[in-house]
Image (cartoon, rainbow, N blue to C red; front, side):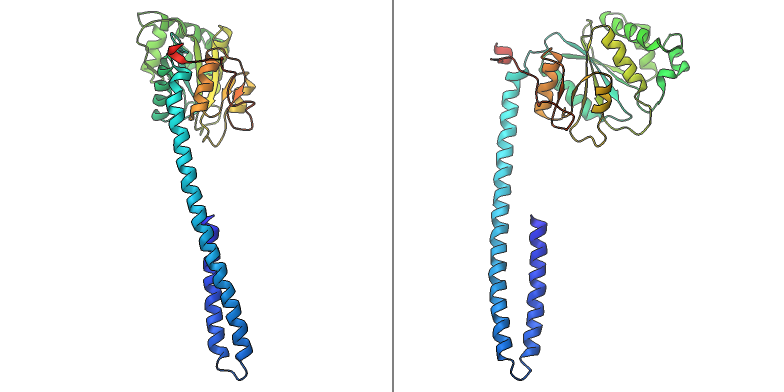
Length: 296
């Protein structure tokens, strides 16, 4: 809107300049009075148009300010209502967060962890295999993690990994992952893993998702809930890939509706594809009636 107004203003200024030059030249010519009167009419109309544009610009700026205030009010409402919607819904849940892709910002991970804690869940670990394409076929990695190379080694890897979170004593798999800088752990107390979240972000290396998806498949075979999520700002969406392997998806995890959808999907509100992109079928799962969080 503002760019268009500027364009019109510059155009009108150019017209005024051209008319001014025309009047100056025309006044020096014989019999120029009719021409001058016509030019004056044109200038008068242009002045009215110019004033109208200024009024429209002021109205547009006022509308933008009002919309910004409305947006701030809605965001504040969401922040205040959020604890009532998600507080305690995931009490006792243990979640593993897996980075899908080469780069996930630390802030993204920490923000998601903090939100899940508010819902009662605990992130047992963050796994990241980014930047190493084809890991599922990497015999060297399998051996380093203590497994025999082959197409099914990832399934055994997940079973050992999940078992490691339930023990107070470190497992060799966890130790090996930390030694290879492939895992960061946040678990405060031992317990069974209930869910896995695949967080899709930037992807710069082809095939870097092979092990993550194999790991997700192995986790699902053991009965875990596995959900694929991404930010609404991701340019190359991961949702089609998540859907291809049969995952429930959330395409706007950076927003409050997206996080509410994640919590209730983890809590068993129903499989589906949630968010605002064309791959979504609904904004949210069906929420329980009368949900009041910790006050329930």
